Amino acid sequence: MKRLPLSLLALIAVIAVAFRASAQTDTLGADSTRLQELTLQIQEMKLNEIMLRSRLDSACNSQRLADSLKIAEQRRCIDSLRTVTPGVPVVVDDDTLFTLYAGRSGYSAIDRAEMVNEIVTTIGSRQSLGRDSVYLVDNEGYTDIMYGRRVIISLTDQDALWQNTSRRELAEAYKPIIAAKIQQLKSDHSLFQLIKRALLFMLVIFILGLLVKLTNYLFRKLRRQIIRFKQQRLRPLIIRDYELLNKRRLGRMLILLSNVLRYLVYLTLFMFSVPMLFAIFPQTEQLALKIFLYIIEPVRMVLTSIVDYIPNLFIILVIWFCIRYIVKGIHFIANEIENEKLKISGFYPDWAQPTFNIIRFLLYAFMIAMIYPYLPGSDSGVFQGISVFVGLIVSLGSSTVIGNIIAGLVITYMRPFKLGDRIKLNDTTGNVIEKTPFVTRLRTPKNEVVTIPNSFIMSSHTVNYSASARQFGLIIHTTVTIGYDAPWRKVHQLLIGAALKTPGVLDHPKPFVLETDLQDYYPCYQINAYIRDADKMGDIMSALHQNIQDAFNEAGVEIMSPHYFAQRDGSASTIPSE
Image 1 (cartoon, one colour):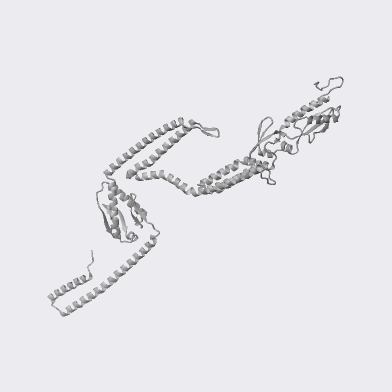
Image 2: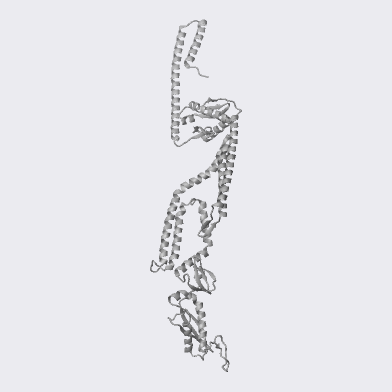
């Protein structure tokens, strides 16, 4: 109820006093003195009314001033927060209705936006509700936007301040937006729309079936064309006289590729048709979006990663090209040194290729170290963990391998032998046919291939026959025992003559004889001869033994090996009659 103004109250009081005075006048008579008193009282009451009015106006002005100052302070705070507070959009059915900035009654702006979305969606999807209009209800401190008996949203003065308007004007602005959205939702969920979506669903399935049949038809024709092409025009794939793939295998590969392409077409069809089917109905529209994102997002991520990786790929290619041409230049220099076209003091030609292999390995290791930061996923913990694990496995399991590699390097630069040399390792004699960082292979005179680890060679002594034969001449020797009855000068002459007749024995330096021992029954004579070809050492030794026997038989001198005793009492000589 509204309060009566003070002037009306004063007038009522005057009338009451007048009636009372009139009554007294009727009973007691008119008294001029009383009238004067009444007049004075009326004037005093008017003065009191004027004073009360002035006090009330002062109080109202003070309250209005305080309210305006409070509102100005709130507006200033909101203006300062407006640049850093984006606001929460109220989204209903992928449509943004308006934006909320302030909370209310313990609910944040996000909670209020979600509640509006849920309420509007529920109202729009229920056909049982009538076509009630959206209306406003003003309350003390807030305004409700209603639909039927349900509150859609309550707007406060804080909401109005954020929008630089009044609460009523803000509610009037939001009211048609909400009403239009509810009407749209009701039309979307009508029976006509449901039938239309069902027909559209069937149409999509029908088109998908036609596309699948068309795909099958086209790929059957493609398969027949591949078979005809294989029978008439297809040629086997030959690389350097080696038939890598014959016609049958090539045909099978082409058919396999066509099948893979067909399945890719199927996958593409279903990738676009399944989300399309789910998107027809509002209830599954969000599910359709999720399915489409599940399919497209990996493809998008891969394509984006490829595009973003192009600068790193360019850097990797530049590093690879630089290292590649540096290796080619070093290989050219190594070949020149190996062919003795380029000579470096103190650097042997047989060091060229091993040194090139070491430098190439170091350059490639340096290239990998430079490329590593630019590899995709190199900064991820999984990639780094796998790298550490692989390095640990290699370091723990390759001690013997690394030992052989180091031994191979040491052997290379020690130069105890080279390819083709006849060497002896412990009890194994043969020619070096292969040197690798891990092992060395020998071929024995019996054509046996023996593989020896390089670490074993480092821990054993090696005899190189070919190196001495090339530089000084290799001395071969054999020992014979002749009786004391034969003059030693004659024995020397026979042994040297037999050596000079042997093919492969050098005339210079001349063969010589050493008497190595004087036994009880015979002295020991050692014939020494120089040869150049260590590979024919076995053949030369065999021929030398044959010539020694012939020379001594012709001279009538008995060779006392093996040991035997002979009494010279008329017994026949041991020399063959031939």
